[in-house]
Image (cartoon, rainbow, N blue to C red; front, side, top):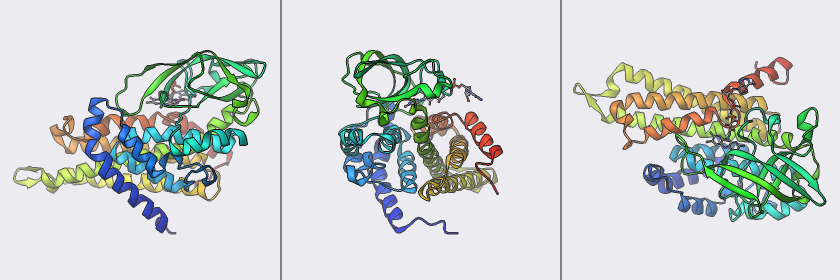
Length: 387
Ligand SMILES: Cc1cc2nc3c(=O)[nH]c(=O)nc-3n(C[C@H](O)[C@H](O)[C@H](O)COP(=O)(O)OP(=O)(O)OC[C@H]3O[C@@H](n4cnc5c(N)ncnc54)[C@H](O)[C@@H]3O)c2cc1C
């Protein structure tokens, strides 16, 4: 077996690593605490072409492979996970429009999205429905050549910058099963009745906004129905979330890597009882455990990404990677904090941000508990085999 990255992937990672060390690491702590929007970093990511990562070259994107996609989120999250958030839901949405959009929709949106002059996100969750997406209440009623949309979406990442925002709606609220009446509409931000109502306060994942979006009698042209056919919205969203899970797993690997790096550095230079604390076996056991789990999470994530690049089904694999890597990120953040002693609790060190950012990966793109049931069903049905 060959576990090495290709020469191209190594070069791509090197470029990203240098970018993160130069532009993100030096400012992350101060900007995160100040609640500052990282405009300069966004502009630099545009110049690198990162907003077009998953968009085919014919529309001006980089069209990178899935392993490189994972490397991007890993490296950015090593610097500041919130920055990965800015690209994460943008990329999930771009992937969905590239894959499922009509030729006219691709032509209209993808070139701007690839440049980052247009940005996007994805609006699925509602106040009363997150995991249970078939329980959403946002309704789109057909009126001539338009839909009239009413509803509220919660936790929408990038909402203040998204144009268009793909919104999961019910085009036939009476359909049974419910998913047959669900569709995605590409809602233009300037539409009358479209309102980003508020930013939701958060434990971590700062730098990118998470908002409540209210749609009141918003008129959306039928030409903005993703793919042009009603009833496919849930499938379109769920297929995009498979790449989303790779992105979340890779973010978790990046956070775990940083927690480990900070712990290793601290264990070498902090002294107690006349020794570097790294001489104590209790510290060594934690470091070894962190490094082992981190490397296992990384390999599982790259493996799931490589399955996708090979054109294989990878819903179970991406779920397994996301579950494992996110648990590892939380454990590494906690262990790094313990190794830092009192300073781990200080806002003057990086580890407290990692500790606040890590839990999101266990929640986003499907909670770990729900994903465990999805993985189990796939195993029981024989769709995925672990052997
Ligand atoms: C910072 C942040 C950013 C986000 N960004 C976006 C975004 O950009 N777009 C978007 O659409 N959403 C976004 N979300 C929403 C996120 O996807 C949901 O929070 C997530 O899917 C869980 O939904 P919920 O919060 O409604 O929890 P619920 O679905 O209410 O779940 C609550 C608990 O019940 C458990 N549970 C639910 N159903 C089952 C079941 N069948 N079996 C076992 N356990 C179950 C869950 O595991 C969880 O422990 C974001 C969330 C956060 C926190």
